[in-house]
Image 1 (cartoon, rainbow, N blue to C red):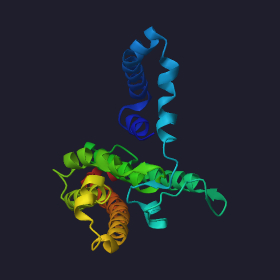
Image 2: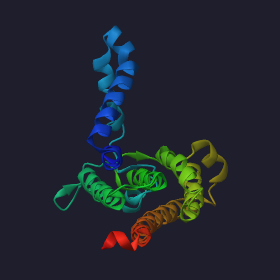
Image 3: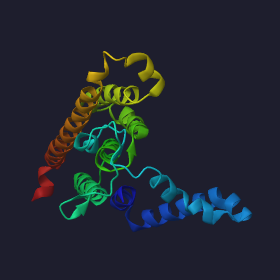
Length: 232
């Protein structure tokens, strides 16, 4: 949805049609070996197989669900919060953040804005959905690395998330845990995980605020750049 919306805003329906055609061509090229060998149906089952592999609230990802039910036992995501299942609650939250991101980009956004918002959505995916693993935050960093070059606002987010990502991996790495987490250190294990989840949650909310404030500033800047004669 993000790519489609941005394409329409920047290039119109014709640009969207061209993008769909190009994507279809690339996709057909990639699946040709499966078509030739009659295994396309097996390939199509892959996303559902991967998603259903660990039906838990959080597969060691330090997100809002780890705060809701910190380990060490992984809790299934088939429970409910009110009328919604855990899974649907996460999907609803992601939909809200996605809608916010589209609102933030409406119009003709610059490339740096698109990259920053795409990175935000990647982090929202990590923080809000169930069944997420600790390594899934990796998708955020390439996008942030590009957009932070021209915008210092994202540098502190990159720095903080680099540390929390490392901590998330280290606190769930069995060989490393065998070395570091001796009996005397075990009481600190879960509190450190919870603290790391809290930091990630604060970053998510602060990032949303930065995007919203940035939207207002960018809109004001564009309006200020319009010649007075065009406003008459």
